[in-house]
Length: 506
Image (cartoon, rainbow, N blue to C red):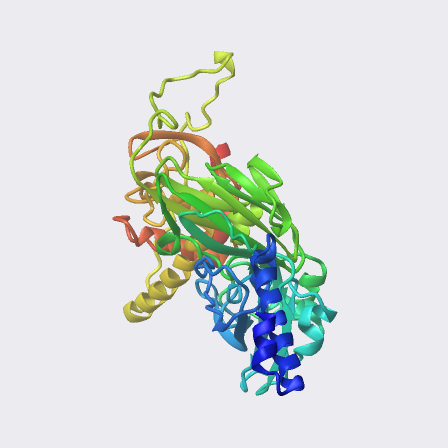
């Protein structure tokens, strides 16, 4: 081949040398590409350009199927918006993409990311972004400080696979995070993650308000509560009830589920648990290696993450909680996954029978409800009919928000309760027969055996951390629902009961 070229370009030595050199380079390149191990070298080359598909929680962009890195363009807008924190409660959230948590970003190991941070002109504050996936000063924060009405652009290489938190790092950093500026970015390993049937995005965080839990209206941020690390709300995905009712996660029996879980903080560690399930695999602290199997509860630090996987074999409603349990039932850190499909009675039978049990010593069994309960009846107050009806409507609306944030987890959205565990509130003869006793149960708590709609319940209901207005409203709401008597409860009636001893002790 070289002799042929010498002959062809015999008259021009320079051209002959140039052509022969080019030929040698091409042949060498082909040889290298076809040599063992060259696939890795070739796949590390960035090929093409694409725009990142971003999703709002609890949804996740689809897995990446390409086998090579590419240039990924990410556009993310910071906005300051008034949104729901709980029913009847609003808050000024500072957001990435209009949502709390911010949009889920999914890229591949080796990708080159061009990041465009846009700060909406209506913003009152400058913002930036610190992506824990970035190797570089401030995780990108030093390059992305953006005034309202401006855009900042920087680029980085996704070197390390894993699940990473991102957040605003503009001073004061704690304030920006506490107001909702955080999210997750997944850098998929180049070989991909094992396939699963469903993936979901959950992020826990705290909110610190001037008002107490459930206080209605637009709530301002409390610097004092934040510094004291005493949150008013601890929630999943930015608000109370974001993963309950018709917003619950869904799955089918036989499916494998992967949860991408982040903790925006800004202060608390999460003890994440799914009641009735066991995590088959846990990628601790958002890494790419399964470091534990068969885990009941996994810790997620503030500013950290975890990936958990499990299969669902039995249908039903599974409760997601922070197992620092008062956060779940009293501050909002609760969600649901509704699983449909066929029963498997070998794995879980359900209740097979129920029998009377008198304890190891029958003489110690005391029924605190065995004697008569003496209650002073409080007459209903009369007022202008139109004004009274408007007041009832306001109370019911407020009461619904209190119910959803305080009572719904146990007594359910339809008031049916849970068989043999939590008594029903729907058509409840226990509630409808005696209003003062109902108030007392909320104010002072309730324990011991009671009979509701012909069925016996014997548990403990602790006193609820609610003020007189909240108790009056929630009971007025309950009485107006599910075939109940329609009674109205006033703050004065609640205060009267609060001043008395627990009726259940009489």
